[in-house]
Image 1 (cartoon, rainbow, N blue to C red):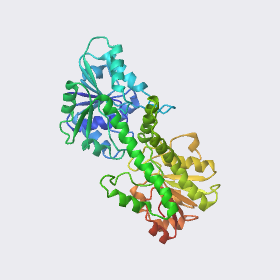
Image 2 (tube, rainbow, N blue to C red):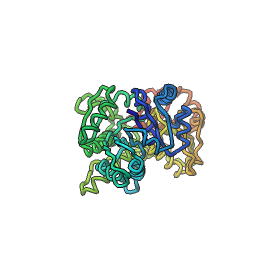
Image 3 (cartoon, rainbow, N blue to C red):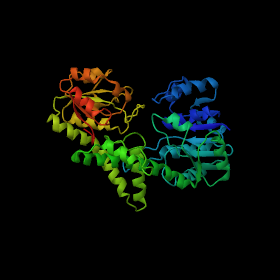
Image 4 (cartoon, rainbow, N blue to C red):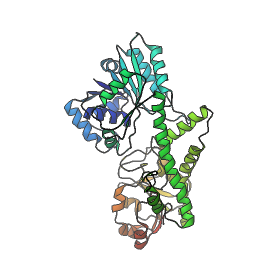
Length: 430
């Protein structure tokens, strides 16, 4: 069975390469000719460990190819994965224009049975919408199925997650579609959960919203720890040993970001409102996350009195390590506020680069960490890149104007930093 993946963004490219690794012949389709040209050359246009090597491997084996010819691609493939973006609208709902366009392209072009699989994160009821969009434009009475197969990829760990998933969710009422999807995933060893399409669609949103809730809970609890003189890291260790809670997503910091959690939480809140339900807990989750970077800034302001004309180094731009994704990154909120208070901002990240945006023209993007720290009055550590733990902080203290370090990820050891001579401030951790 040949697989077509429509959309060669982060999810689409990863999906395509993993199916190629599993032995299937895969085609990646995109309307962006520049992306396709880069992928055909073996160049990954975003950062994700291990993925570029896999791209070059399967370009060599012939298991994967790329195209912009949508009509030919749709006609030549039986299994079609929809992996286009569903960005947030201003009202918080998911923008479905790209999914709708793909559905209509399939309906207008199909020449036989097609299994259409939505892997994009989509609102509950999308399977029915996609079915309707295809039917509305069909030029012949060709049979097809639409199934939901949400992804659960962690940026920075996408290849590991895709090759060794903890579960595969299949949302379909069609036995034919179920059997075909089971065939596609036959080499994967994990539970396969078959549900109704609406259930599969909600599982994706519910999963991300729950993880976001754990993060915001710990971040809000860290604020109390600061007042009580309690170490949030020790609290997390203590409660994480309870198997009902677990150890993951208990790390306090300056909040979550990325392409999934902010968008998916907003979309779930929007869906609830559309159905006259208030998800009040998620509303608080969003509020805590939006204010958490400002909480660390308040701590820094107490120390520095003012940011005006102070040189401030921001270390880490990506929303998490092992990615160059800066969408909704807490570091950008910190930079925006520092700029608004007339700070002189110097930024460094091992991989991510600031966008070519007018608002960041006044930020000095540094090629080396030392360049950002040299002469600084304060350092904000915003991404928990492991390389920051290996820095010679004694040397960094020597080149700073004032040794103030505000650790937004509780990455460094407070006792060690204080012993070096830093004023060290973490989140719920001093």
